[in-house]
Image (cartoon, rainbow over all chains, first blue to last red; front, side, top):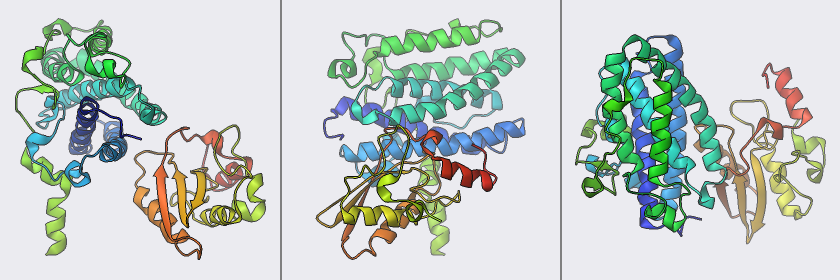
Length: 255
Length: 128
């Protein structure tokens, strides 16, 4: 049952779901453009998995009172709470692999932190998919870090900033994180951020990518939008929202 | 041949998992199980029951409540399977409505498939 989720919990799951929704769209943009056939197959599979996750998360949000049509895309672009690094399509494969890897990992850490009984089994099942997604993305990101360290470092600094905002401000520790306090999660934003940082420090250890280029203290809590879990008022392009809602397909069907 | 036509419903086994019929079903619930066992998985030559995707069935006030799980969360036949279940059970004279609850606990596993289901998959060239 989801009738005991408070507003913080609803917005937290909404941000995870919207991030996965836009991520699936970005996967679909790249699933015929990867450097190897394996990348295209992996991208198509990941897009399908992510949409499957979104479907279940939207079910939970609907049970908690969110309007199903609004969830499905009948809303303005600025009402999406996706990680900011997904607002625009990636210009290069290096950037895409970096953005996808970083946002998938952040979103998975947030799901894995949920202690509410509504995620019993659901979280475990999503984790089974994420294991393979993250193995693949880390392998590709490691390869890119060896081949194109400067491009990875630049893309990583931007993507990590958005991922850290999605996770939450560093000032949200075990004593202050409202989701930990309500019992919805069992790890604070500060703890999740630490694990996230440690992972990438290890991943890039043997490469020329310098993770210290990231501002690991951002975002500042005062400027952080707690509803959309980001900084600033950026958003996806309206065309992306139309694509998600199948607007052009509907127009074609009516013709 | 479907699972229910080869064995009694209360003999259906799903290994150590707390899913499936447990022998306490009413006659109507047993009939629902038998009908669900006639619905084929769209991708694999097994029924939804043989695939261990039906975790539980209860009928109260002529409403069938079905706990359904999926091997794949992004299953492209998700709505199709929902429609098949509703269409199948609404033909039963004692069922007025069907409520489908998608559940993930326990997480579906190949370990839920019994020996007969495994044999059918192997005969169809599907590796486990």
